[in-house]
Structure formats: C-alpha cells, structure tokens
Length: 547
Ligand SMILES: [Zn+2]
Image (tube, rainbow, N blue to C red; front, side, top):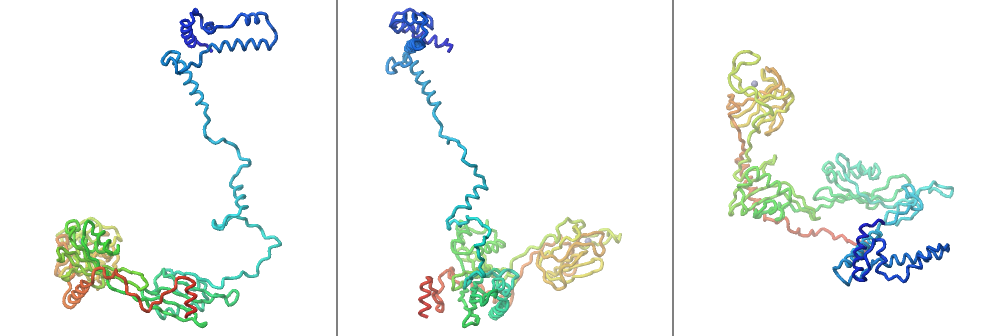
C-alpha cells in the first residue's frame, strides 16, 4: 500500500477532524490517530520498548495497535446523514466498490465438470444396449446373438402359417403366370389360373401395376407349393375378376362393375382466373390443362378472354359403381360471350385433332426450314458447282452436318421416296392444293411411298448423294408441278370436314351440347345387384351363419 492518493483522502478527513476536534494537521501516517481519543498510547510504546519477549503479550500489543489503527478508519459512514458531503460520497464509493467486488465473485451456473467413472465409447454403449430389454413397441432390437450351446435343440421343421394373404403386382413386361409363380403358386396351378383368366380378358390387356390379392392355403406336404385358395383383382375399369376354390376345384368368378360413361361437362364464368374457376367448378386438373392448350392454339388468352366470358368444356369421364373415377381426353372446348359461342372446338377423327364448329380443322403454320442450318445457296440462276455452267438452281440449299434429321415442313403424303438422278436419295411430299416439297441428297430416307406424314416428322437424314459436293439439303417446292422459290411461299394448312363426315361431326357436337353441366359429378344411383360387405369381423361371422 503506497498511498499517495489515500494519503490525501485521509488528509481530507483529517482536516474535517481538525474542524471537529481542533487537533493539528499532521503527516498522513500519523494523523489517523488524531481524532480518536486514545486511552493511553504510552503504555504500549513502553511495552515495546521494554522488549517483552512473551509472544502472547506481543500479540496482544499488536492487536491493540491494529485495532486502534483500524478503528480510526472511517469506512462505514451512515449514508442517511450528510447526504452530498465528501464523507458521504466516500462512503457511497466504498459501498459501490465492495458491491462490485462481491458481484465479481458470484458463482456461475455452468455445470461442474467431472470425469465419468468409466469412459463410455461406442463399443461400451453397444454392450450396455445388448444387455437391456427394449420395449416391444420400440422394436425390441436389443439383445445379442450368441452361439448355440448344447442345450439348443434345432426344430425339425418350423410350424407354418395355415393361410397366407399377400398382394402381388403385375409388373411391366411380366406375365400373369410368372407373377403367380413368384408369389408362391405351383407352376401347374399358375398356368391353369392364367388360362382361366385369359378366358375372361386377354392377358395382354391387363395394365402393369395391377394389384392382385392372393390367398394361399396350407401346404399339402412339406416342400410342396401352397395351393391357391382365392385370387381377386380389378381386371378392367368395369370388371373385377376372382378365382376361388369351390369344393376343391378352382372356379372363375367375373363380377362386372357398373360404369357410368356420362361425359363430364363443366361450364362457368371465367372470373379472375380461368384455371381456378374451372377447377372450382369441378373440372379435373388435366382436363383444364388440355382445355387451355387446345384453346390457346386458336385464341390469344391475353386479349381475347374477359372475366365475364363463359368457359365450356367436356371431357371423357367414367364412373364405376365402386367409386373410382377415370377422366380422359378433352372432347370439346368452348368459349362463350353473352350467350353466343365465340369459339367451339370438337375433337374429331382418329388422330385426335380439334375442329371448329363449322368443320374447319385447326390451322397449322408450315415450318420455315426443314433442317436447322443456314442457307448457302438461294433459288435462281447460278453457276453449277459440279457441272461448271450456268443453270437454274430450282431450290434452296441448307448447310447441315451429315446425318442431321430432315423434317417435313407440313402435313402431306409421300409422293416419291428413292433414288432420283442428280437428286440422289430424294423424297417428294404432296401437300394438296397443288403444292409439293422435295428434299434431295439424303444419306438415308426414313419414309416410303404413300406414307402420310405430319408436320415436323423426320423423313430422312442429310447426306451427299447425287450431284453434290458435300453434305447439305437441297430443298425445293412445287406449285402445280413447277418449281417455285420456297422462300416466297408460307403455308397454312387447314383440314376441312365435308359431306357425311361433316354431318356426323355436327351431330356429335349437338349431342355434347345436350350434356348437363356437372351431371357426371353427382351421385351414382346405387347398384341393386351389389351386396353390402360387412365391415366388422363379427358381422362377417353372423352373415356366414345366416347364409
Ligand atoms: Zn441445291
């Protein structure tokens, strides 16, 4: 303790003391005694001077000295008095300092660290786990496999379940018989059952993924295959097939399911979102998507549809009496404004095209180019690269790598496919209306004479056959047998129904317009032939007794 500052502090107090007690100010070491009226400091000094060797007395003397020293320290002023005075502030400072000191020594709440009695690593934990008994509900996976001792007697044969219920799935590319054998049915019985089922429905018509409920009975002898007791599956949307053992013989029991084929018609106001309105009205999601795609090819949705318009769509719909629903293709797409049809499209024909109510098919813009690649030589007079003299170039040459697919620019019928002089491998397609296109120098032809081709269909591959200097496509166009500049023609093809076909088309359209919107969403009338299956096991027993 080398207290210059403290010295001053004491001095201050000392000066107070001067005021109070009138004692003269002295040096810092001495003043402390000053305010206290010591009983008699002289005897202590005398004792010291007399050099008393007794330790106890020296201690007593030291204690007395210390107590007088510390008694003079005015550490605990009453803070309720003289508020604001120097003494008061010093007291407050002491209190604060001691409080901070006390708080600094406050213990934390961290757990006291201690090492476990034995270290537990994974091996030890597994050992503990194998010794404990886990509840069955948690899988009871504890315990340990031990080697068999002499007390273990192996069973001759394990008792088997008398009945086995299982579900088999017909996989893609699977055969019905093979699926049965895989499920445990004997080979001979499996082929017998497959033949029985084939009598009711061609086995190839069974959809992959069909689930088959199979019940197998007790083995007649050890090692023999279990006999089939019963088998049941949904063979078709409208047919449930069952094979049952009746009196020891297998019998097929087809159970037709009543199916209602009323097409589903949904009609409603477009509102803020056509999709959401149609979904809210009960249209299946894929039907709405088909509707949007079909109508979108004909109408610009952004400009042509307003919130007040009415959408009208009809989809193929099947409802089975057992509750299943199958929604198929979009049959009709209509858009109405103020009670008048703005657009009416009906699916017609085998290729599933849509036709307008007037019988005009959807319009199809021809492709601009039959191969992806730049044009290297245009239509017109030019110096022939091989023949060396000027002659008419009757088409357009496209740069393309060897083997690049060539697409038909629009729908048509192949008029010629094969070797054609300087054209090499050549395909000519007639598009009707006196228009035809030719594709030359192919490495390979992918169509044959008379084939009907669709726009964008691959008809061959780029090559360099015939009079050609390298792989490229020579593309030409004919109008009434004469070549024309392909760049000058853009085609739009439209199919048009006429005569008898148009009449039946109109009849079909009228028929679909008769369907009540939402009729197919209602409840099916109950099937009178269907039996109520008891749900509870006890009811099943009762009904067996009764029957
Ligand atoms: Zn050419």
